[in-house]
Image (tube, rainbow, N blue to C red):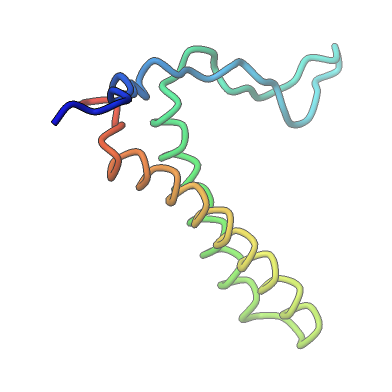
Amino acid sequence: MKKPVPDPPPFDFSRFKTRGISFGPHDFNGKCMFNVSEELCAEDALVHACLLLNCLRASACDAASHLTANDHALVIGIAQQAEMAKALVDSVLAGLVCSGRGGGE
């Protein structure tokens, strides 16, 4: 049976690249001290973001164990927000793989 609408062409995630963005503190000349490089594979950048968010969550949970009740609640809130952000990034990456849209396919 012929489909009325053909399948879309395969999605090549590897063609999406990062845009250079500077962030963080500035030196005495006004230049940002840190940046995200241009032309990085977007999928690799998302994977690294997951790793950073996981470290943030672990650090916040560890720090919370040494705080008073009110401060503990604030730091646990940070950990939960990091976990939610990581879940969103993980979901995007999983969706790319499940739908056959990974860069290596």
